[in-house]
Amino acid sequence: MSEQLLELHDLSFVPEGEEVLVGRVETGSYAVFPVDGAELLRRIADGMTLDQAATWYEDRFGEPVDVAEFAETLADLGFIREPGADRQIVQPVRLRWLGRAVFSPLAWILYGSIFAGWVFAVARDNAVLPHPSQIFFTESLVAVQVGLTLSQLPLLFLHEGFHILAGRRLGLPSRLRVSNRLTYLVFETQLNGLMSVPRNARYLPFVAGMLLDGLAVCSLGLVAELTRLASGSFSLAGRFCLAAAFTVVLRMGWQCLLYLRTDLYYVFATALNCYDLHEASTALLRNRIWRALGRTGRVRDEKQWSERDRRVGTFYGPFIVLAILASCLLTAFGTFPVARLYLVKVVHDLGTGTSGPHFWDVLVSLALNVTQVVALIWLSRRKRRAVAGRGPRLLQGKAD
Image (tube, rainbow, N blue to C red; front, side, top):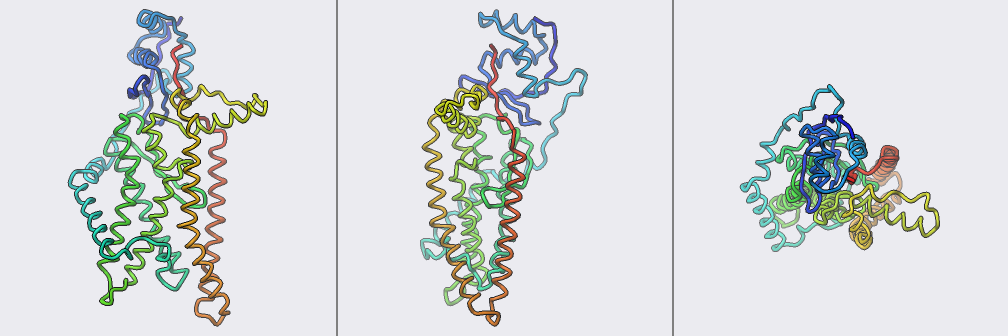
């Protein structure tokens, strides 16, 4: 026993059925505790010494507790504040008012009107629907690449901006960083405090980006419809909008690739009441493989994930298979048709020789593609180095 008094950082306690999710908002460190462990932690946070907390626990639950081991768990999670250190004050987040406005009832009415208008336009002429052939809105491949790249950057920022505003609406801090998914450059929002709010409140921050993507597709389609020429064909601006809309549709399709831990994955994991489903499921699969091969020395400790993650992770495999199938379908019906049309144009224009009007345009286009691939390979390697050795973000707190 110990008369030691632990000074703890401000912690959030969110009931999750038979467990409690405890976390430190400013660092994004969270742990799943059983109810009795969370109650013990509350007593320590309220000022009980370890000796007093152990006595209270035994009186309350009828069994002893190893408070020294419990204190080590708290230290590993970064919950313990150094003696004499100033308490970190979580500053109010900016733009909370804007987050509330963007997701207000009036805003939802506006979003519904945009969607209804797009559905009406599609019903009149399905040419407004995004299609791979719409990518090449002009004869110049360089103009297509540069134009779509410049159009996607603000759309990507708006996608992440909706995530940020949905979180700030709840008073949660956020951070934006550049990363990659497979061979694609992406922006990612980190909402460290999202696990400190009830589960039902997490869904909107997760799906907010997909909401923006849907609004972008509808809005771009409406602009294309409203700028049609008198002949009924699409104007250059309209063709550009349809091309941009198709790239957004591709991004929305990527959300089905659950093994990439997309927005849809987090919705899925939240609905299943899991906290680190991907890591738990992959670790369980690898452990089964290592045990079958007799290499038990490489088996990871499964207790570092919550019981719920381990239980669901055992049956998560089929969903990974479905995500891989979705990836194949996306490639077959989205990426491959665009690549085929691109290669046909490249071969045709290069075959005209230097006298052809688009010969040098094609060379510059190929150079841009090579540069992009090299840059994304570098980003991917950098990301792997950063992730190497990183442990799971959620530990299972134990009071025994």
